[in-house]
Length: 378
Ligand SMILES: [Zn+2]
Image: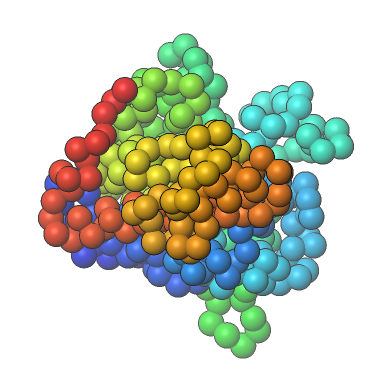
């Protein structure tokens, strides 16, 4: 399965486009909310549709441990299980294995880790990651990679990059042999398959990033991701690594930067020519009472909002801002009401999705400079 990208307009390096998946089109540049265990935390699926989220993420590591991929497959796959008809992307499980798994041990075969839930021992290999992701049945699935730790010496970053390239080849071989086994295919209908996305690594070395991109492209994937970023490096380094990979990645295929970022960062990366991004920030920050607004970030638990009759963001058109005051949102948060997480997250996702909508509009008009004026490298 290819992942056709139709480019409709350009402004500098930025592209306005549309990616066609097996479950509908995704307008790009796109921000993808993260639905870790088959749920964008605190937000029901009908609200995600109202917010016009066209694609969301699921995390393979979490879904593998709970409820288990065999169960999800037996219930018709992740789309059906979570009642989401639009596009889905699953990650490879690699990032979480490294960040959440206990006692991880990496070998050529794969990664052995202990579950953060019950301490049980598991092995993820490129083949196993493909098997799990195909069983979950997302539209876009990710090659199994090693997220290089930071900081890492050059030789260590190169060795890790070489491993990711070997794992990418193994991922692709297994994927090609099994891609039609997704749970959405039914007897008597023409089978369709998900798209497999290759991942660029290379640590914090621009030449390694370029080499990783070149050799990943030689393996020929329908789309490419840039991984292993925002792992503690300064922001100008993130920008440099993205730029190095983008120099090499083909312009006619979707390009995805994983795990970014703050609102001004996703604007900047879209301006550089990135088509897809995902991040837990709007959802996680919402649950902690941090709101992203046109006036900057605000911490809703702050006492200065106790009698504030205004909306969270006067420029936001979301249903939270249309109905509730800062005073009420503050009260909910201080009282630890579950509604606080829900309302804060809905507003934050609306802000992120509106930001990308504004980026797409600006690209259509041919000028992103107004949106980039607030962007700094600090
Ligand atoms: Zn709002």
